[in-house]
Image (cartoon, rainbow, N blue to C red; front, side):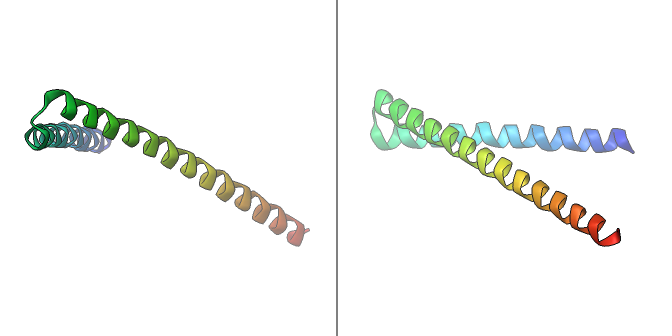
Length: 86
């Protein structure tokens, strides 16, 4: 059962990676066709990747902050329950 779950997880991750590479290729070709300049397409693609990286960092930061707040709220609730039980 666990082996099947791991296999499914790896298959999904492999599929996501393939789709990510395919999307990257499609965007690259579209930029090249639109700009008709290799250097311009490369520059735009680099800016897109830079913005994508910043958005990932921002999203991870927000998730960490939310998790920390959620865990702190859970701790406060547990302390209140302990006080009520005593």
